[in-house]
Length: 227
Image (cartoon, rainbow, N blue to C red; front, side, top):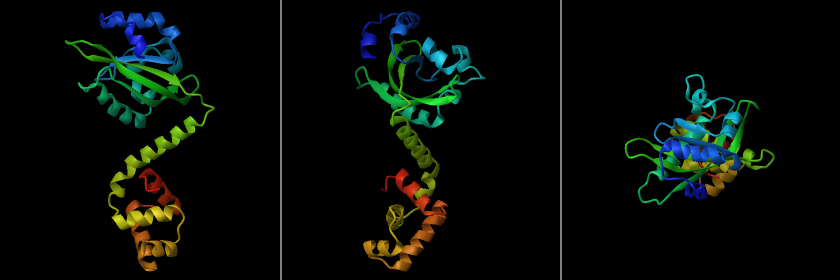
């Protein structure tokens, strides 16, 4: 990404995009250039358009809005947070790295990509532009499965945070111990409280979190880093 920008002319946006078009076949992955504020794409490489299965106008049109059709919503929040790094004045030529799922219309499935992004063009009288290069991750490796698990935990975290913060300190301790398979008697002994108190905590936790099984305890403990 950095070497690529060194070879670009310091000219207009369209001239820079033309430079990218001249070398896009030599570059790996999918190249996307978009407005920083609106995320509206102004260029997607031929490889990228072929992968998602439509042209640039369709990507941003009503029928195929970019982030609704080709990117998972749960990935976008993290991506938007990282983009803020690029606009920090103290950072010199900053670059961010993240994992992103991209939808392939041809294969009808989501595929993980390892992405790098940085500022591409700054126009004092107009918007700033971001360039992203997304390289596909081998679907046969363990990484996609791990990413899927992390995404699932992230979604669970966001959906259940309001319920989780209702728990007290002792209830969180009981939750974490139940999640790792401790019995009520073992928990009572470890926390130096009575057996009945442990069961009361377990009942209260189930009511607050709306869970019905030990698996529910494990889900919360993993998502909120209690185990």
